[in-house]
Image 1 (cartoon, rainbow, N blue to C red):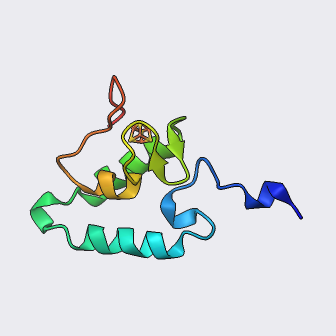
Image 2 (spheres, rainbow, N blue to C red; image 1 turned 30 degrees about the horizontal axis):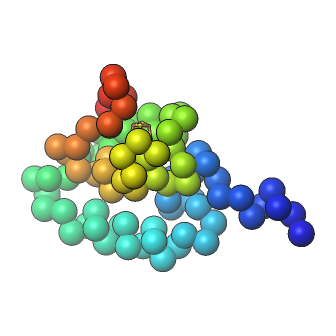
Length: 88
Ligand code: SF4
């Protein structure tokens, strides 16, 4: 048994967390259900997730500061990173 392989990836987005496929699919549905005027633009979304990937508060797809799934939070134009100062 390789316990290293069973640990969740702390710096992964939800889409990449092993065993979280159903949750990742639900997250995609939430994002797709956002009205267009509430969706962050593609460039902003990508930049936000890049910041999350480099952040020590990212924990297997969730933000340890707010508890949100970062992909869903980052997809909402009016949301901000909860860190002080915020990273996006
Ligand atoms: S603190 Fe901000 S940058 Fe870090 S994981 Fe949370 S939302 Fe992403």
